[in-house]
Length: 295
Length: 295
Image (cartoon, each protein chain N blue to C red):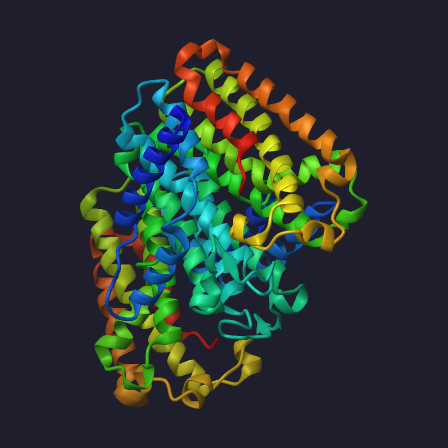
């Protein structure tokens, strides 16, 4: 196991434990929404966004107790978006991470409410004093996360994904879609780590540049995996882009061109971190991991 | 027109103008979610919750520029909850404020996303520096709003409303449902006004007690109106409680008992504000208004 693999496994474990505490099981009528929130948020994947928070914050010697909370907040947003995206009215996906999506396990109303509650709790977690002693820092985190998640970020990207005539998209169009739909939260991961770690403006700008390249590389690799892997490996339906005749990086650049662009982005995103020296190794490892991942 | 009626009309106008600025129309694919957010949030009713924010904050000479922002935040939460509640998977309501609900005007996916975006933007508005110079105050507002809106507040109440066997509820059961589903945001209105106005702990406690009695009175009157008014007057379907055999304050207390309990609550909620003298007149007027309203 590479250093990076053991690091992301460690941070995923920290996030799992913290989310489990933030989302306790309950008795009575409120137990159903609590269970649905747990189903949608626990046992979840690589926890890439929280990893970025923690790895970025570690560079500034930020106490883990703080960066874990910021990581949980962005993961709550990510998980709520998956719950709502999977609904029949949206992507209508029955499978998520290899098991029934929240609306299949529970029902549509519960999935809507569990998503709403996770979205709300993300801001509760950030606003609490345990996240950072400075109210100004906590507010900046909440502001960055709201902008990343809202109508000019992730939600806007989801709107474009559903309604725009994507088969006619050019490269600028799919890059814009990516920047909003998946890029905004990845960007928040690195930036949120810099903010909670109290990096300088220059340092946070470097993290922003890193995350923007990383997010784009991540999406290109996603397109490659959708075209080349089976549903069992991915833990979700495969081959959907071609079936829906979506414009993808592969359709526009060809498979070799897409791979080459992703490799270039991985190089450039790592270069933005050179100023941090060896402390940037985990974040640079994340870039290599994104490029090499199989699911 | 009473003093109270002209005051709430004035504050509703201020909120309408501010929401219009927070939610600009847009061109392109993002225009659809912007339009849906505007449809769900503008031209909306009495704006009771923002009125409570502004009227409470006024008692502490808080600049209106601040309290209007807090009022917009709670109204965004209220409007998102109506958009999601109206969805076919939830209450399946085609009519809201006398016109098509968001999912009828647009579609289910757009309604889900517009609700998510309004919910997110509420926290963006609170976190921005224009809401209050102190980050600690802004975070306290965000924390209070998240707790009022989330799984232990409004969303939890909605869960109970959908899943609990309400026909068997006793008085404690429907009071708990009310406290969560509608009470939590009304409570935030008064408390948020006290927080942004930098009231003392004792003053905020008095506002809390006022809002808890007011919220319960509001729900009892809602039950009375559902049983006695027609859909045209209400701007939404009427007589639904009896049709669904729900436990209501009327079913448990009788019509006279419910009216008498509401009147008692209006008296007690006003008494909590005596410490504020004549400055409390607008909030006391709101209590009389809640009791006397016809829709």
